Structures are given as C-alpha cells and as structure tokens.
Amino acid sequence: MDNYTIILVLLGVMVMLTVVADKIKIASPIILIIAGIGIGFLPSMPPLEIDPDIIFLLFLPPLLYDAAFNIQFKDFRENLGTISGLAIGLVFLTTAGVAVLTHYMIPGMTWPLAFVLGAILAATDAVAAISITKNLGLSKHTTTILEGESLINDASALVAYRFAIAAVQGAVFIWWKAGLTFLLLMAGGFLVGFLLGRLLMLILYYVRSSNMAVLSFMLMGPFTAYLVAEELHVSGVIAVVLLGFIIAMLKREKKFQPLMEPSKTMWEVIVYLLNGLIFILIGLEFPVVIRNIDRALFLPYIGYAFLITIVTILIRMIRVFGQRKRLEKGFHDPKLQNSRRAVRASALLSFQESVIISWSGMRGIVSLAIAIGLPKNLDDGSPFPMRDDIIFIATVVVIITILGQGLILPSIVKRVTKKEEAATQKVIVS
Image 1 (tube, rainbow, N blue to C red):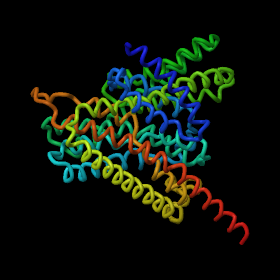
Image 2: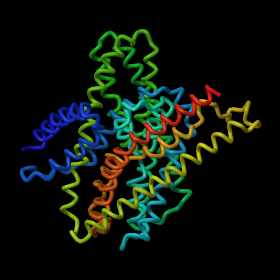
Image 3: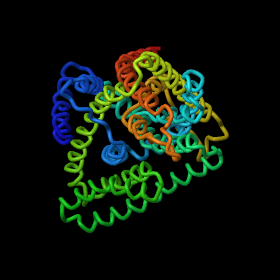
Image 4: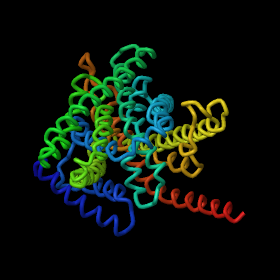
C-alpha cells in the first residue's frame, strides 16, 4: 500500500471511530490514539513515519486559522494577560523545568539536550483538550483561554527549540540575544500576517461577486501566510493567527455574510478530518519509535516520561493559580481601577476554571512533529546525541498526557462544575 492509500484508509477508520466514540461517550482522541497504536503493530502495516514539514505546513495553518477566525477577539484581548502568561511565560518555564529534571534524572542527558527535550514538550495542544471536553459544557471563558493559549504557544516553543538545538551544536546561549530574537520573530510574524490579511481582504472585496473565488482565496490564505512568514524567517504561527483575526472582521460585513455559512461548513470538514487524523498518526508513531530503542531502556524511559508529565502538570498548576492570584490582586488594587491596566471582573479566574485549565495541558502533534524533526546529524557530521531516546520519551509523554489526562479530565470538569453549582445555590439560599 502506498502512502495515499494508507491515508485514505486511515481517514475512513477515523470517521467510523469518531462515530463510535460519540455513541459510547468516550472522547474521540482517546479512541483514535489507541486505534493508531493497534494499527501500527499490525504485521501487514508498513511503518508510517511522520514528515515534520508536512505536519507544520498541512496541519498547523488551517487549525490555527480556524481557531483564530472563530474566537471572539474581544474575549481574546480581555484575557490577553492570562493567555500570554500561559503561551509565553509558561512555555519557557516548562522548558526550564523539564530540562532541570531530565538533566539530573536521565543518564547522559547533557544540559543542551535536556533543554531540547524541554522545548519539545513545552507547548500544549488545546485541540486535544477541547476535543475531550467538547460535550462537558466548558465555560466560554475557559475555552477562550485554552484556545488563545494554543494560538501563541507553538511560536514560543519553536523559538525555545531553535536555541536549544543551537546549544547542542556548540553555540553559546545569550539571554538578551534570545529575547531579542523572540521579539523579532513575533513582530515579523505580526507584520506578515497584518499585511497579507489586508491584502486578502482587498482581493476578497474585488472577487466578492464570485462565491467560489472568495472561498478559494480564504482556503489558500493561511497556507500562504505560513509559507511567506517562514521564508522570511519569522513566525508563521503568529502570521496565520493574525490573518485569522483580520479575516474574521468580514463576518460583520453584510456583503460577505451569505458566504460565512459555506465557509464555516468548509472549515468544519477540514478541521474535523485533520483533527481526527492527527490523533491516529500520534498512535501510529509509537510502534515506529519503539523499534529504535534499546529494549533494556524501554521501561526506564516510560518511567521518565511519567515523571516528566507530573512535573509539567505541577508547573502548569503553579503558573495558573499564580495568575489567578495576580488577577484578583489587580482587580482589588485601587491604583489600577481607572487605568488601562485595570482588571475586569470577567477576566478573573474562578477556582473551578483554574483547576480545569491546569489539567488541560495535554501535549500533541506539534510536540511530536518537533521531536521527529530533530536533525540526524550535527553540523560536523557526527550523529545527533540521544536522538532516538529524546523522540521516544517525547512520544510517550504525548500519549500519556492525552490518554491519562484525557481520561481524567471529564471527571474533573464534572466534579468542579457540581461544586460550583452547589456553592452558587448555597449563596442564593443564604
């Protein structure tokens, strides 16, 4: 079977399993990953290795664009402090935390290699969290924060990864240079997204009489923005996100409102297929990475992956609850009441929301793609040290977070929601 046939078969299997998952009331990502692992171990199944370039070009732009297009910009801006704290501050904090743990825990894991693994596992995958909780009635506030985080954190993780790889190659890490590079990448992505967004709006106005032309240009937009930004060595992620925000303004234009429903349907189908395929591919990758690992290291590395998962959850929890305290302090600070820095009541995090956001830090396809994209050789031609080990550990962490956290998350949501409702009724009665 060639790759095209395999992909078509996987898509068919994915659609059927998604229907089954809905009927048995289990989140589809969990079923799809388990199915992917099972399919990968079939003797007749040829190894299907993921091409990182395909992941970043085929999967990332449409998923980011769709999320940015559908998120309410007003809500995003109102929660920007929390979102940026998770998407930027937490990413670098997680990178450092995982690096410290793995450097002292895993034999042979040098500081540069530890930071590579930390950067790979720094970004969370809100697609998994939202897919798992889609029928659990998450508040709009919680969903906005989770989706907003996923719009930016990939860019932060890719920057951290770039500097970690440079350190492995022998480059000296300089904090101010890393910070400046990060700002330039973000600013460059913002500029590319803004200019292409405005250009696309002009084109759409010009071809608005042709429905097919409008839909076609809207479909090509995110891929073009990502490619142009990456060719200019700035953040393709930020470029696509800003493009989505700008094109979302067309929803208010009467001339384009009749096209919004067909556009929405088109993107729903694309995102549905890509999301499902992502989770099957994650499962399929597990049998592939097992073949490259010494059998004696199999169980120890799974143990390391469990510990890394626990540490990432703890770091995320500390960051989320710390942000909750800062918001409350800012809300009650009289000096900020009438300033631009004033914290609105709608931006505050409840205890229940903090718990759900803390537990929604699953890793996903971006972490896996970054890991598989590790160079096989260093600049001097020598093999990249511990490459297979890093890929294996990262893959196991991704699977553990989606399966483990994914299975527990619905129970947490239901429990904290019940407590919140009980507390609300108690207040009303009193």
